[in-house]
Every structure is written in C-alpha cells, then in structure tokens.
Length: 233
Ligand SMILES: [Zn+2]
Image (cartoon, rainbow, N blue to C red; front, side, top):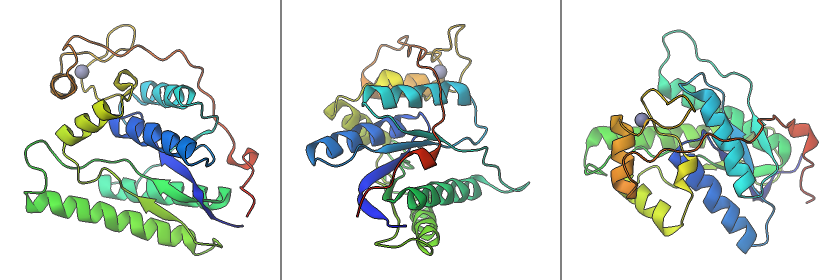
C-alpha cells in the first residue's frame, strides 16, 4: 500500500476545532489542486454524539466532501483517562489513513485557554503530551505503510480560544455548524445558548448570546473506507 502526502484526513468531532480543520483543509486542497480531504468522526460515547455526528455530515456537505468515515465505538479500559482515549482515536485515524493511502492526518484539537495561552506549565505539558501522542500514533501506523508513512498534524494545539475565534472570523467559517454546548439542548436539538460554554463562545465570536445552531437535516451515513480508492502513486 502506498501512502501519499497530498490528501488530508481530518479528525472531526463536530467541535469548532473540527469545523475549522475541515474548512481550512478543504480550501487548501481546492487552492492547491489536491484531492478533497476525508473526514473521520470518532465515536467515543461523548455527550451529544448524535448531534455532533450530524454536524460533521453538515461540514462535509458544506465543503463538497463526499467521504465521512464513522469509526466503530472506541472505548478505553476502565480507569483510563482522556489521554488514553486520544491515543486510541489517533491510532485509529492514522491506521485508517495508512489503509487509504492518506499520509497526512489533521487533529484539530485546541488545548489552550483564554488569557493563559502558553503561560502555565500545566498547559505546556498538556500540549506537549498531545504532540507526543500524535507523533507516536503516526509512527505506529507507519510501520506497515510504504512511502513517506503517516504524520499527524496539530495546527491549533497551542492556540487560545481567542485565537481560535479570530481564525474562525478570518476564514469566515460557518460557526453555526459547530458544537460546544454543555447544557441541555432545546426541543429541536439546538445549542442552549445560555450555558457557560455557549456564553463564552458567543462573546468571543460576536454572536448574540441567544443565537442557536440549527439542527442539521443531513441524513447520517457511514462510508466504508474500502470504497475509497487509494490515490495512484
Ligand atoms: Zn449551551
């Protein structure tokens, strides 16, 4: 199997980072005349997974992307933490990329926090650990891959929420199609608009506090990776 560096696989969990990762990768691919990115939605049992999954389908349709891969449920051993879950998701994504001939994986996680970006040792450790996990998962998937192997990029890992919001504005990303709500969605499944996360992002993005994201109407579907032909070398 040959692994090419040109087509990107974006890990998209329906978050703002996921949206930005897809939005940016899609535009880069169009500008550089490269194949459209592939999206991978990790099923990890987190809150509002159905809503997030619908939003990822919406990201794909907005960017004209056909390929959304939904993973099987990814679980961690009892007592393991979020870092272990990241390891499993990254390994799954990297191996999916390798099997499809896609050597560039984008993990659009952002780990910094407003007003503390780069200033706390704890935060720097968190970012460094994420980079280590990404590098090792890429190396693991590269063992059986030919060509240049697989590498995982973290374009937003050390950006603060404020910088993420600036990026969303600068790129005119459709932020209504991102999920950050920690409250109870309304009857139509929209962001609540009133929980701390909704207020935080509404302020940073200049949204009205009561503004809510529309419930995606796109039918969710899973695409078998084997249906996507590897790129010719
Ligand atoms: Zn909310």
